[in-house]
Length: 152
Image (cartoon, rainbow, N blue to C red):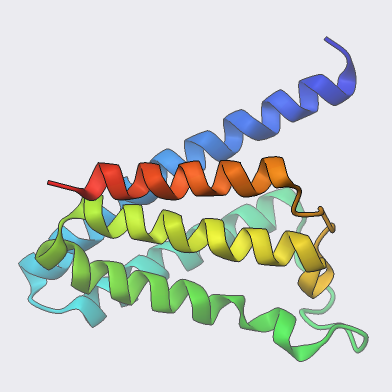
């Protein structure tokens, strides 16, 4: 296996594991919210634990940063955390009421729609990838799959 194929496989495995972790995280946080009787408190705890983990990783892997901003970086690049906050609060509140499978399935559908748009137009500095007919069919099949999974 050459270097590019090895990197592709490594990236795919890493993201597969990350994807496996999302429903686990959502289930744990929804259960914590139920136990604590507060979605907001459960989200705050999740972010605190994640923040501590991210700071430890930063310090171990890169050391103390010189700066957290760069003048040439558009302000909206720093707003990704708001989307994470919305996701965490919504999944923490919705999952116990709607079911973890249903909630995650619709999150997946939203991710598919968003990634196709971001890729098509290369939004926010992302690598542009044209929405071919093959990709459109793939998205349609994945959307059908999401609806078949949530259908009772």
